[in-house]
Image 1: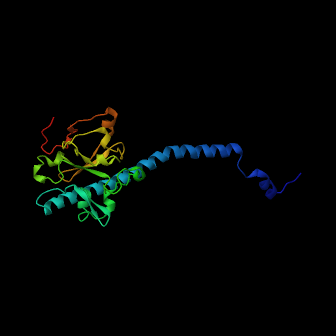
Image 2: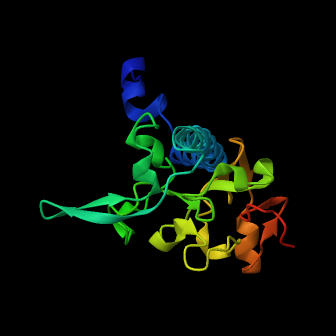
Length: 223
């Protein structure tokens, strides 16, 4: 029986078979599996680059603060009660006049705000070397290898290393491993350095005063 060409197309002569559709879906799934990690890594590299700019600006702000305050880095001051509300005066709040915006204090890869025990006490997701807060910059004997700022874990006590004992050290629990299993550091000379901090976590390392050439000790004399 003769079936017009238009009718044959309607009956499925020009369509896809089930097998062909499954093959196409499988190819799309394979391509997605290959490309998704690539796109994800590219997005993280972009966030890391933005974070580098943030921590560099904060570090520059700390150095500018020292220039304007008799060579001293910003202090951690206790909060004060004003009109029934606590006004926080940590080191990061002291820098508000030296940093372009509050956004600079937030790492773009930090996504744990809802879990943070600190709310307003710490403005920054970056931590500061407590051995330098309120101290003169001149006590740093080797600025190019002495930590000024670092990417801290979400625990508020990790924001100022050495807070309890006034001795800076490397501890696996103080970092957040935000960028490709590592974190950005700002050294006391203002340069930024990425460190593979996941190595500290894997080894559960604590009490290390010098690691991969950098230190929290301003005298840089500890082994």
